[in-house]
Length: 403
Ligand code: CTP
Image (tube, rainbow, N blue to C red; front, side, top):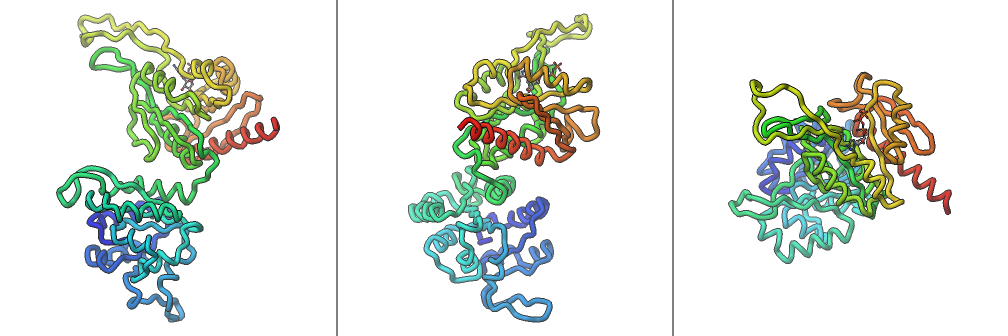
């Protein structure tokens, strides 16, 4: 970390990275160490914190001193992140200057082999300065990943681009560079997630308990494979993953319209949203209990997936989702056929840890060719990665077979 004013947030970033399973070692520039004392990172990481080429040289259990602290920090790492990265750091990195521990460590890591993520935060005028713009371009060209800062009120009192982008974005950027592939690069993937709401009256809605987690995990999984993801989601409690294009909708009609707009040219549609099958005729005024018979007249909503199957390009792969408690595979198979999709992911909410509201799921994937693949109980995040990979494997096998 360098001495951007956001450097106090680096403490929390380290905690989030640790929570995500990372072992974190910290190198601070001398100025950053003035703002956030190394002792804080040492206490929280249990690791020696590097601040200078000349002091605190590490030594191992035998008492041997490392004469190369910059190499010590650079060796054997999965990724390097500079957060926050000042304009000065970008300039030195672009020029290949190594005049302290941090910049020499940076030089000791080849960004074409080990992912390096830079998180610039600074005053908006500095961020837009031609020298800083040019340095960013040089760094990108050399294989560095740069997380674009957020826009809004800055610590200096001005408004503009230069804010800390948030731990979720930084962790997601690292997730992509460490775990990502290019399998879906150049392809668009559309994912629907969460629930829809149909209005009963101006104060009440008819909805369900879908959390959005499964669809959000699928959007992340497709993004990790390099896809350009459009995530169409209804109201949810959990935030959508960063870096994907989100379209927030509420009703079935809104979701249908968003899918219609996003579908042309898409490689895949994952229809994970729990869409209302029924819609009441919405009352213009609030229904009063004394003046109402308690009966809701419901009509069927449009089936978004079935319509997408009728409209799609032949190359778009469609995946539907089914929730069944009886004759699970039989009903999932007839759903696959009646909707005209290529796959159906089915789960039974009566099973422990499966379905709505859980962070885990246990599903079976049915293919048009009759194949059934069972996935054991696992986190929705891992399951989503497995599902996306599975469908991709099958699609590439098909294309190879056609050749
Ligand atoms: N779906 C849709 N449009 C709807 C309803 C559902 O696109 N109006 C999609 C869902 O996103 C999901 C799949 O269709 O991918 C679920 O099928 P559905 O027939 O709605 O299943 P259930 O709601 O479980 O209905 P059923 O009572 O027939 O089991």
